[in-house]
Length: 538
Image (cartoon, rainbow, N blue to C red; front, side, top):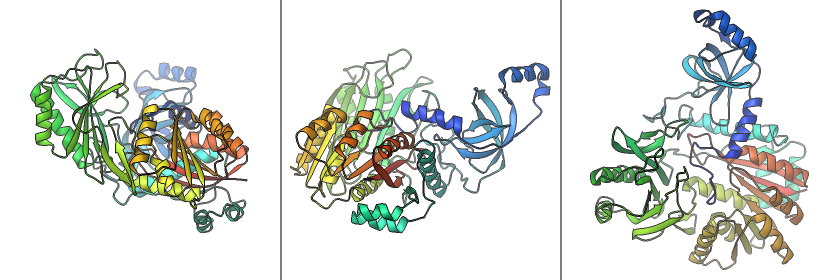
């Protein structure tokens, strides 16, 4: 989800995530036999058995088997084995024994539905959300929060070991020594302290209150039984599940969405139909500034003209006084991309203001801004810590977006350079630097792998390079550029453990040592995990 790129909304995967998921499915789990129930004889056993032998699989579609759940994949699905064949079971947890029904088979793995728990995990809890079994937004509400944090750390460890071929230290080893060395910025002592123990992966940093943390709602709108509805897509589909409340959204976001839907029905606003390309209202996007309390409403429409627009604005202002900005984004393309190219202000300001730490940000309709402000401050504080800044360093922030990390680093650096390929993001970054009076920050539009070598030719030498790429990871040419520039430290902020591990292997082979990895739970109750990683030059 990053920097105006398609990182995706919660529960959606980018291409890199899908590729790594395929690899994970082919290699996940260990051998564990499942006991098959006698279904074959019930429905033409001989023919079905022959089909199995032809396919070479121990199970077929609609079979019911009892399996042990031995792990979870990167999507939060339980992983089990039936006679050595891998089955993915949504809703199942490691350590459970379950009766499942096979829904789909492929050559190396299949999918099954959880029918009955024979033995439940001690970490299983009742999901508090009433539409959890229908909505695709969360994947882990049935797992205790402590269990989620532990699994996310293990997910990172597995990726580092399997994909990155890195040796990970046992949990808790050398943590205190390494922690003090990292804080002091003593890279030499730090390298000596870790010795041959391997990469330290710290426990996942979670939230004290892991609910109602999202500051942005992007709600698709459609028609069900002739009525305008809006909510989330059902798991694995584009069928809209109507929603009145979402337990990971800020309560004010829920309130705005509910009232906007009601106003839309009252005014007879037609909802967009994905199949026909007709209808007007596509999405309702709401942004909430946690620190200032300001809110922005964006109506994404399939066309410029909004019927009864004055009445629409009047009713919103009357019923939702906390909304200080009402915008319209126009998207007439038949696509699942939310925003179109044109945005205009219908009423109020074109931005709302919020803070991360002491840094103020102006947030426009299409600005990328981290959706969990509490954990963003945790993540960025760890980035500053790993950068080992004393106030004398020059830092380059690749994939800088609207300057969130750049400006956070600028509080502790002599000079910061940020680069981003999206022009609108750089415009926002420059405005945010001016807003905070930070004149020692320079932003440039372009690809990092093109701009950073040009900076090097101009004599700019980075002490620290920070990267925060989209899910697909760093461009190979950027990794080559880092190896050529040889900064003392590299801090890698990642939203995808698989591509992180791949890139760490390249940097390790090029002369860097992966010292410490800090997983951060930016998205509780989902399968996503962010990481902040420190690498030092060998």
